[in-house]
Image 1 (cartoon, rainbow, N blue to C red):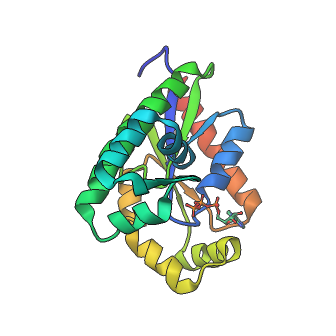
Image 2 (image 1 turned 120 degrees about the vertical axis):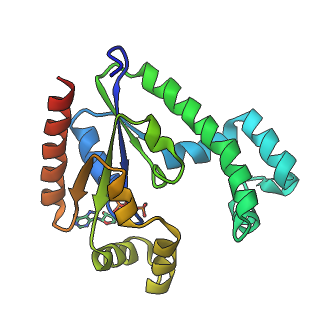
Length: 201
Ligand code: ATP
């Protein structure tokens, strides 16, 4: 374990699992949270090296007056796994470096990296421990419908596109059960943080 650097806790979970809500509870308990999805978006809009590479591969249409042209890019990589791999090979290392810089600037012993694709991107390998937030499929669907107004079919399609909970669990050191209410989730977070603190003390 690296004693001079913060201990890195990765947190992930499928669509609507509650990982952002759980991460917010960790933050309230003093654990700074790096939101990989938000940072990835910002990096694609702001990092000139990344922008040049994206334009090289996808053309000028990859950006418009509002920044990254997400619908265009999504269309390009949808059903073209090679292009998706190329895009990931541009964005993931940049996010990795950005996280390292952020982490090294934190003056705490534990930090959290939140990512929807923590396992898929391989970035879980840079975490000291991994937490997966797990919820029954029907509860995830109900909560996501309430949050996003998506149809049941759209959510099922997204779930199908993500890795399974079994695969997540296999790579995880801790599981947070989010089938209960928010007080239950908060308690799960508190108990998990106690265990992590014990691990590093
Ligand atoms: P995504 O990857 O889709 O962005 P997420 O895993 O970050 O999702 P959240 O946004 O944290 O999930 O939670 C999904 C929705 O469910 C939110 O509207 C959140 O407020 C709600 N929610 C989360 N946990 C609970 C809970 N225990 N009880 C009731 N609602 C919850």
